[in-house]
Length: 353
Image (tube, rainbow, N blue to C red):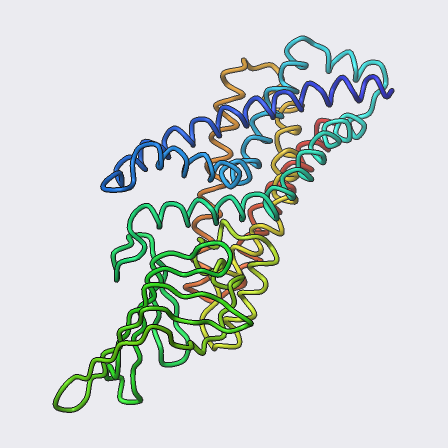
């Protein structure tokens, strides 16, 4: 029986890995073509290629569910086309045993995906964003196209580039009074984190008084802000590229500041529930192979997998923003499509069994 599990699992595993490689390769190609539109000045084609390659762990993590769906359809479908599944069932192997044989290699892939999503992708994304911002001119005021905005209290902050190790380039701060009028604006070329506090370097501050402006310059100035280098690394990245712990830490920080954190909650639940989403899609794929797609061609199985994957992704993309607009739980927005897929898969498997 172990040999049978190994044979089924190997077929599915090879198919999923092959599909994963193809999808990630296409995603990197399209991303590189898109990134070439930002090539100018100190940011060349080689920098764009480096950026795209550094973001490949995140892209691999994101397409894992769809790759598992299509790969399972191809791997099990090939066994069905050769009548191997029919022989396996005729030999007395239960449908549940076959499902478990498919899930074993999937669990290995999910474990690898969790490691990538928590440790590899966030760090490589951080390096990629820092390198690109620096190459595109992170030291000039408001010059960086990919800078980040942040608000703390009555101060709005723009940072051109967040570098690893607690170094910021191009920090612009706008402070507003109770009457929502601009009180002051300042720009620091660099900021460094030393002994638990931020120090601004080469600072120019403009105070807007009732009848004139007052400009002050300082080589060094302390900056009282609650953001740590870890939190700033979180701010500099898209929520989808962050780790579980980074998202949870920043959600708590936004709660303390009284700021909206729904987007980060949605990204958090998307990451936490990704293994269950992947399992539900694979369960649906298995039910298709033993049901509607038992005797169709390979091309039809691939087409079905792509269609189901895109419909699932569109449902998630619609429910996610809808949860922020209409105020229902982001957890429901992520879990509902997966639950429907799992329910449909179980119903089809029970009918096939």
